Length: 313
Length: 313
Image (spheres, each protein chain N blue to C red):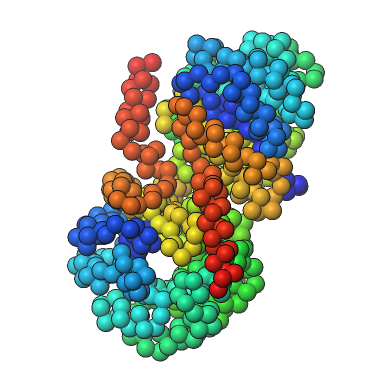
């Protein structure tokens, strides 16, 4: 198995989504360009959802056009229904992320339907999907639900099995929506899912850092063979329909960890840090992560002082 | 092997040490009382070091008297030399933490002597140690040094082997002084140390959260059988002689993780949170950690709203 990982930058979707003040489309476009230039080849650039529910992402179609002009970038967009998937494809999307929740309560809160209805709608989405469109499933609340608490592994696996049976060559992302998953739980579900659905080529993991466990669970998933990881520059994030779920794990923290481990991410931390800094400084943003501060301008000065002091000894 | 872990609260030493404004002894004593009441039975209450170098900890002898009146508490104090160990024992200390660094440059910077001199002095300490005094070795920069960078596992193991040979029944704490250790590195050294020195009854691990890896490495050490973990309430911390090394992993984050995993810590998170909040709010303190915010008063209100909304559906 390859050691390298792919990081999916989700700040433009999961990170911008809860920000109240409007971020101009040109500002978002500049973030896409800079994130891509830092080496992030896959970016979740937005979603096709109700503009009333998530007004911040209502310009996703425009951003698809921006992303199409960035060579090598694979932009993905989130869709909650087959109808929104059609809309996204018509707008030029070639990588869809279909979101449903493992828990009934969160699925109702997030997409206003039962899990069974989401699964039926997924079948409709598959029927209508053009052959050149890539697909991922985001399984929200795979570990913990803000309403129902800890999710038992068995029923979640059953749902995964059912979705995989409908179409095997889909990336499956197990999402810790609340940030309450522990590393042992993540390891358990990732291992069980890979064992029960060996036909799945790509497993992904989506961490929130609400309780500081973002890197611990990301590492646990990596140990079980997951190689695709969601993260948001500046540690932005949070689900507006999952109270207390603030902050995706910061991309710069994830890149720092993997690169220190000798695991290639393809991302330049040097190029990413100023982008993450600007993301964290967006009006209305709630930022997180540690590496940004530890590796910031003062840290560089401190390192230099340390080095000079050492030569002076 | 027991699943339960012991958390050593180090805020009163590692956390208070870099704080400039004087914390009155009575304030420190109140922290000890409240930390002990929250279930922290082992607290590093201070150090016997030069009061010029670390003025904040010059009242450690007074705090030993305070700690002696707290039933069930095992206070430990840090000492860098055999001479300071004698001073500590004379002041009533019954649990010493002898600190030396794996790296020459950090040992010079921290205790102004070579590693070989620290080892020789450790022999003197052992010769003079009363039989009723417990002992731990804090091996600083066991993974990474602010001056020398990443530490190779081999020479660190050699040093551990040498120290263990001098006296086997000592707790050994592998310290990530800079917070730059990755979970795979921590797992590797912990596993190798346990394998090469099976006579060591207690291995401990000391994490800094500078780059957000505090819980990831703590979990990695736990997976390798370590059961004693240092942490600081409020995520306070930092070594004044290790530039950029801010913030021990927060005790509340560590307790949250282990308790969520079903691993007993003996600590009441509910009792700990307000103490951690007050520690983080100390003038001059640099705080860290995530659980404090995630579980704070607003989080409780949000949980309540979620629950009410659920019943209203």
